[in-house]
Amino acid sequence: MEEEKLEINPADYFSPTAPIPARGTFRDYYYPVVCGGIGFVGVLFMNFFARKPVFSGIQQHMIAGSLGVVTGFTLDRWMDRRAAHRDAVLYNYIVSHPEDFPPIQRKKFTEVLESWVPIR
Image (cartoon, rainbow, N blue to C red):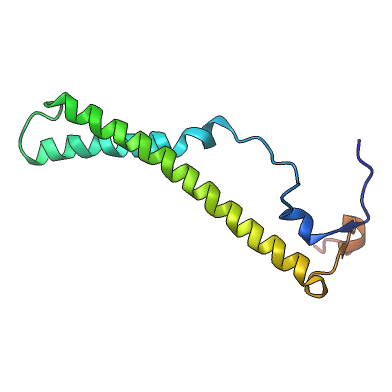
C-alpha cells in the first residue's frame, strides 16, 4: 500500500500519467441508449401526430433507433476527447504557473474541526 503523502499537489489531479478509474457499464452505454430511445420514440410521435398507428413503418423505428445509437457512441467519444483536451490545458497551466498552485498541506479532521458542546 502506498504511504500517506503529507502534501497534495494540484497538478496530480490532471496529470496524463495518473491512473484512470474504470468506467462503469452505465456510463459506457448511457448516451447510446438514450439517443437510440430518442430516435425510436421520435418516430412514434411522428406517427401519432400523423394519425397513423404508432408502430406502423417498423423500418423507420429501426433506422431511427440505429442512427440514435451511432450518434450516442459518437457523442460519447466527442465528450471524452473534449474532457481530455480540457484536462491537458489545465495540467499545462498548473505546471507552467506553480506559484499560483502551491502544494496544499494535508490536515486531519481533528485539526480542522473545533470542539462543539450542545447547549440546551
